[in-house]
Image (tube, rainbow, N blue to C red):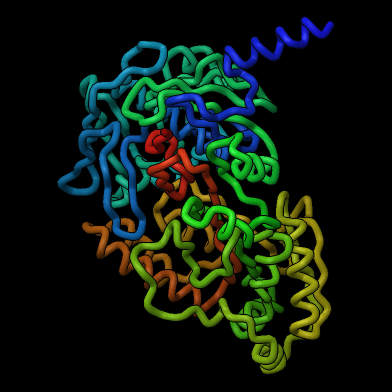
Length: 481
């Protein structure tokens, strides 16, 4: 028996498969949570986007702050009138060896538009193309239903990457998510193993030859990086938030995530039809308590309506309704003769922080505030919490969605959004989006509460860690010595 045990240990040492030693030359070990799926058009979680960001190359990268477009799979995305757009593709192949063509995108987008996936509204509600065709193997032609300068931002969405013809024919989405085939710098070798992870092999422009993806809990992964048995942990639990700065002084990163929380008011319901009442409730929210409590330092208190991951340029003005001022909040409710008492409704995934929010509002405003799940039928009669997970870097997606959430139908706001969508330059669009944002902050159909951020820590042999809002750490850019 002792001989068999010794042989087993020797075998693990030879193959390097023990999972406890990351120091294999050219191999980067990465800790992450279990992805919700690896079907790119139907995911919104950080772990899923981390993996699919390595398996696929999007048409372009889009920076919301500057409006800068960096072509990736596309050689160019151009238009002369903002109605007719042409996308030229670079030569590329899928990991199964088949070519990536303009028809690959057209067929994929047709499927995505018809599905009920996370990224489906990008095509049906935001892009709104009347026609999308492949005019040549390397050329996509789009004709919109109105002029829009947001096309580069929308086509950069990570959910609009192409799928190979094999899965478009079979429609076996569950099977494909276990063994995805992309067009990116890494391929998944041997499929995905739920609860364990998978192995990425380099096939394109990337630094690490191989990436060992390990599924686990963030606290254990944090400790593994400290112990030297894991190279990179892509999430830092709240309990380690402060220790991170000392444990990994120059080996940690924080980035803005495309996620934010809001309190949406039913503006057509009499108790909340007065903006004074809505501002009173906004001033009664202790956002720092949410950050340190149920949000576990995975978010920042909101400082604007648009979160940093979605904001065009720097905001110059202050956000008064983002402040915590209980005395001012109570005074506003008294001024508006608020009848007292409210129910705050929550949906899936927001119950914990909504209950904390309700308790805080009750204490700060001295009115009865309770928390309750959203009704199965009919609109809520009180404010409701909203956890927004963005599919694109375009402010249009968020601002239009927030207005719809609360039933806000102001015509000037609608016109500013339409003008921003049609704007000829990112700078012009950014100014118009800020006007629309400022109007929301004045009328306050929704109150901004928090914006999400991510953390990563890494070991001494890791270098060149960069992050983006949608993928977090960019795996292809990370080097390992």
